[in-house]
Length: 199
Length: 199
Image 1 (cartoon, rainbow over the protein chains, first blue to last red):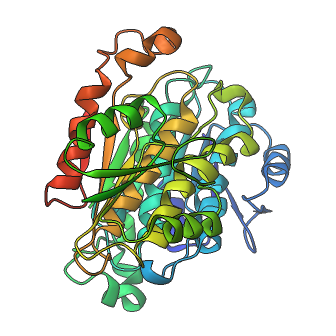
Image 2 (image 1 turned 45 degrees about the vertical axis):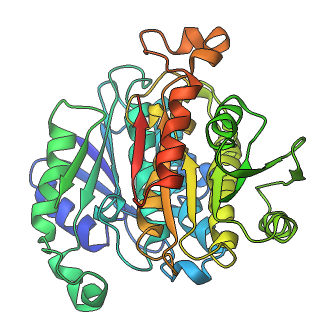
């Protein structure tokens, strides 16, 4: 398979490339690095990405920013960061990709554990992750030509714990290599409309 | 209790006012009708609403628009309609309300059955509802002064079926009066961070 991986340079992206790269051709994309560059917030930039990549069988998104901060001080503008980037960035990949992916191809998006297991300062992350999961469940029943879509919801990563531990006390961190298996299940399996929780 | 009800003129809003109005004082608000007027998309308008309403013990939102359309033709601008209105409109009520609600007060927001049980043309509704539910679960653990927040997720309403039936074939529609009970449970109970599915 030819797999377009957006966020290839991140911790999850690298683990996904390691897992799937032995069996498939990976085209890595990112904002500032990778084989191809893309600003996922812009549908035009995403359309350009697909043109440059050529026909692909799978799209994996492990990219997306959200703002973290106390609910008492959150502003609509700070919520917009996550809505524009992690949510609509991933949605843009589906809007553009549904027209050009090879028949039977798949989208695999990324949410996160805080959808259902919230943390302090995480109201935007919980919002955006819930939106990504709801969107994917619904898109799954409308995608044409056997296209599929799933979401991977990772716990905090062992590899990220150095920076995030104070926000995730008591969470049982998972290695990125274990999270990568869920992307493999989505891409190489046949399910659609699923949220794979690696918690 | 003094209850601020946004969307008081809608089908759910009227049923909520009928259920809770016998025991509590209801201040109805809406874009074009009600005791008070508000544009929930604007945080400034929501802040003005709270000033005009004075101290309240509960905020109920039964308002919010989303766009419906085929995934194949959906645009980012059409997703923005629901994100700005049904999502951020309800979030704005929490951002402003957390500072002025009486101690122990509650927010009750509205999502909908398609979060987990999607329909054709409903990718924006599923997205927005998932976002509202994720946000509320997270906000629940950060709200100060004993403030609470829950979400009611109604099935399609018996009263709305005339217009929506073709999109909800096989769904077991519920009367608005049954949905109103979930708002009563949220406002008059003591739970927080819950999604009450009236399915």
